[in-house]
Structure formats: C-alpha cells, structure tokens
Image (cartoon, rainbow, N blue to C red; front, side):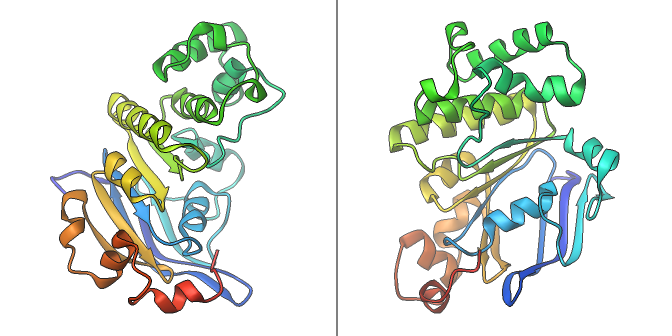
Length: 262
C-alpha cells in the first residue's frame, strides 16, 4: 500500500471459548498511518479480535505482530513496552469513577510514562480542550457528565500519551446520532494530528464510513472482504452487501439466526 510498512500483521488468528469458535484462521494487515474499521454483525468476533491484539486475550494459535515484533504471549515488562505504543477508547468509555476527569486523562502519563501530577494535569487539560471540554471540567467526575462527554474524556485519555496506534471499540454505542457524528469527527481529527494508525471496531456503518479510509468485514471468524471505503457500495461481495443494506435474507442469515459467537 503505497510503500507503507505493515504496522499490525495478523496471521492464522484463532480463538475459541469451549465449543464456540470465534476467530478462525483470520488474516489481516493494517498499514502504518492507515485508519481501518472492522465491521460485522453482533457476535461475530469483532471485540474478541481487538482484545487479542491489545493483549487482554491470548489467541489459541496464530501470530500477532506489531512493527514486525511477535507480541502473542508477551507479558510483564515486554507487554508494557508494547502497550506504551497503544491508546484505546473503550466502548463504554471505562472511566475511573473515583478520579476527576483530568486524572482519568492523565492516568497513563503518570502510571506508564512517569510524568509528575502537575505536568500530567497540564497535559490532561490540553487534551480535554482538544475534545471540546474546557478547563472548568477538569475537576468534575464521570458521574457529573453526560455519556457523550464521557466519550470525549475517553478519547482525550486515549490520545494523551501520543500513541502510535489507536483502538476504538464501538465509539458511537450508547450516544445519540448527533453526538456520534461529533465523536467520529473528533476521532478523525485526533488520528490525523497524531499521524497514528487506527483500528475501529463497529457495527455502525455510518460511523465506519466517517472514521475509516479502509473497511474490513468479519464473518464467521474470518475477514470476508477488505477494501477502501469508497468501494464498499460496489464490493461485489454478497456478505458485505447484505450487511450494509441491513437485509435479513442472504449468506449471513444462518449465522444471524444461530447462537452468537462472541
């Protein structure tokens, strides 16, 4: 892809929970500076894929390389070193209820990068400004703000350490369409300003189109199609067509009516 190196390389990724096979020999390349959205129906393994990449889960087999380094099975200091390259906006923002907003944003700076509280506060307030929250918000707590504002704080935390790779887990879930549009625009702005590689997990096609420059469709534990956003309406793939048009009838029907995979 235009000579860019592969930032994240997945090969033969497999993950099961008992008899439930979620990821099945999945392959995917994500290039440096690329923003890719992985789409798919609920229960098709999108979140399991993400959790394997960031090290929350360990695959049963297969390879996960970040910057050419095998990260599967890393732990302790080695995993921490890799994780310092990463930033993540969790589905529910996942803020610490007992910490004020600035401490939520500056948490990674203090815990993983050894930044002092005073400097972390200054940096956190600047990140809050970048996502549209003023300095007066810094000492408020998550319970005091709306779901949309919590997403903004989660995004500020994700970008606070200036990571090389950003992950977004269903960024528009739980917020109204207008706020969803706002969050998506903030994500695009943040990714571009950092020059980061981004992976978004979503079932929201409108959001995926706004955020990503490339889309990958996951179905039955494998990547069924990968291509530029502009090409998705004419993908020639029946699985993609059924999903983006929200049709009940089609090749996905059997799995949709069955037991969810994950």
